[in-house]
Amino acid sequence: MSNVKNANKEAIKMLLSGATLSKVPCPYCHGVRVIKNGYALCIQCGQKPNQKNYEDKKQNRSKINKLSSNENSIIILNEKFNKLCNKLENEDDYDVQYKILLVAEIILNILPKLK
Image (tube, rainbow, N blue to C red; front, side, top):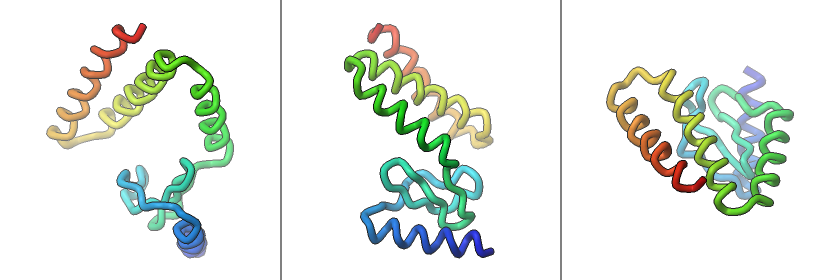
């Protein structure tokens, strides 16, 4: 319980310093998340990214910014495609599965054009 209280206090501090509420729910409990500079914190369960993953993502973003726009687009689309595949694997709702597959198909059609 104290973990959730600490998360609420941290979320309040984040909101006061310019964070926003995320449209994407927490993947663990589907609760509301507060996000600032790519750092997401769930208000309901207290889940947050571990520091190593957060630092790795920041480093990857800085590498991406140095690449050409086509290389950048390819990397971003590959990341999106992987996220969609993970989401599809855990999704039971057929309507949501259909939407995910449509977006995945669009990405697969775009990727060869960028290479």
